[in-house]
Length: 261
Image (cartoon, rainbow, N blue to C red):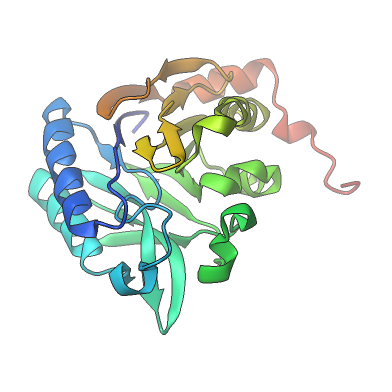
């Protein structure tokens, strides 16, 4: 399959209210599905937001109940869903976890955020993951990273060298650093010649402002579409053949010198 339709769901998250946020996600997915996407992606920490006072009380336990909702939605609407991430307690350790669910409601991949953001004390509450994430959607090899991971080009390059065509990014990236978000996403696309599908949250929470800017980026680093600051969803068609066309002109990865760096 060389064409795939992707839907980005940019949510306004209610702090420390997983029940309301799951209902909101369900509503948005049900609306996004009208455009008949092959895959839907949600943002980072969308069940609770980055608020840690009650995080151990309101986190999921081994993915539940949030994972059950996503699996049911994927199966009901016959679409793959990248769950975005949420606080997930496993054997008394807390992870920032994401899952990839196929059309049959089955888990095909999972990812625990590797790089934890010390400035927000994420590292004091969460345990960092130890494995990268590569999976296939409709026969297309894809990778998944979460928010702060974007600042580490080595991670995306490792996924690109392994042959991914699309990088999915779930994030909760604040407005005061949104220019970094815009630049880094384009840079990761250009230097690795891949499509990037990036899903951020939107809304204001006490002193924090998140102004969306979810986007789709081509292997040339061109912004195909960028969201504004409002809660919304939109679908995009991706033609994987564009990657071969771009690489036929100049193939960065084949010119690498890993023996020297």
